[in-house]
Image (cartoon, rainbow, N blue to C red):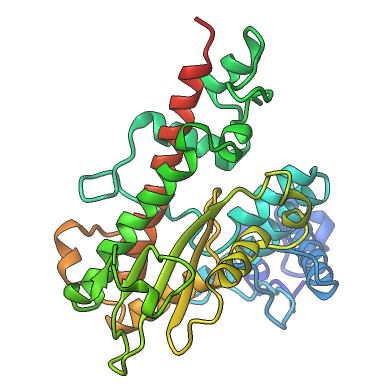
Length: 356
């Protein structure tokens, strides 16, 4: 008690308990000891999962030292976050272990850095505003909750999409079905924001969306965006946006075991499609429908932030306190664009399939 909980020891005399009292004799002391026991159990669970190579949230880190309550002071806010991190990590593992493949795929995509950036966006003009319907659908997708209008479609009449497949209440079929251009909506929305960002990082005249001479550096496929001579040595930055759905039949088994499985598959697919375009650099800006960013996409954002020293410039006019840096600003813009476009397409599809 004296070693582990000096803060509690100092408090006991003021609470009418003797300083050398046994833990079980005072409710506060007993509660503190029990709480720390829970934290140590959570930490052990997290350490075991990390040691076994199990998938965990990207933000989950475990310091070498076991948690010890060492008194009050300036270090306590940091310590409190560490202790909370253990508990959240343990709860996440418990949820993950009891989930089916679709839920696991969703969790592994959501718990990657930046995947939920749109939830931090303050709704205002300048690319950060989501319509109420879009915000509801985005939250439903993140929580794995049924989407109101889609639930009605799945429950009324045949409950089928115009393509003939059964519509589920979570909207997963619509996210995997390209009828009426669902894939195009979200692809173009992300591409628009990416194009705007690159023009603020590189010479605007060098950033091209349709470059008629692309066969000279990308003979097999026309890229979405090209940054000409991006490094000053004659090399071009060739960017292709790709968005996949982790719960689609072709991805769900792998996505339930490996974080960003779908994004990695899209990166490999783009590399095969483009072939060897050296000395130029191909960036497959791969995203998952729940928000997970592929490694090449994250690297591009980091590279752009580094060129700008992670500072805001022209973006200051529409920045808020939640976007103090270049990376946070454009991370939110990209995620808002993705989820707004997905919601637009999903809601439109549900309206089409709603029984008249």
